[in-house]
Image (cartoon, rainbow, N blue to C red; front, side, top):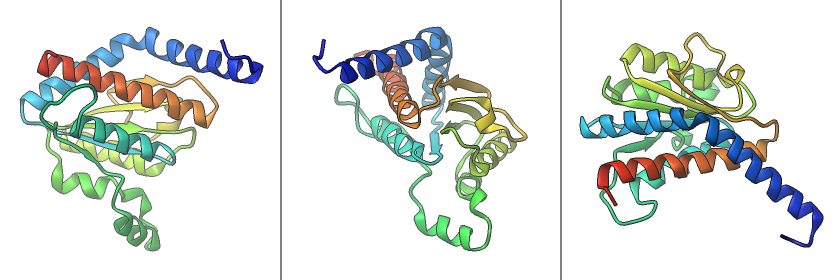
Length: 193
């Protein structure tokens, strides 16, 4: 145990938060990994987007699937929708920033695909618009967020993994662990390593 009491307390809080998020929702995580494996076997893709600091988690998650988590394997078809700054600035200038993800989904996604959202503590109209677009396309939708209030749009995600914290940093940490576990489950199922 660390000698610094503040560090020791922070580590305990971190471990408890991850345990309390993952253990009771194991079935949700397993169900999502199963859906991803089925989608990848049907030549479906995973589209990922995030809000605020969760855009980094979305990009990291895409990287884990594209490159590797634990061993060499083929890249999996995953696309992060968080990269197009020019589109975001153009839409924002015209008051249409909420369309940043939906505009990318419409020409690319199909009903065989899955949309995974990462949300922080603040509602984001762009995530709600993405959910609505995904439902219209017929995609499976999943979200990782601190509360359903963060995704309080017209359409709820089909799969919801709740993050229990009011700390932005802890939410990001737990979402990264979620991403690692999800990729690990998919790798094990698809590549039996």
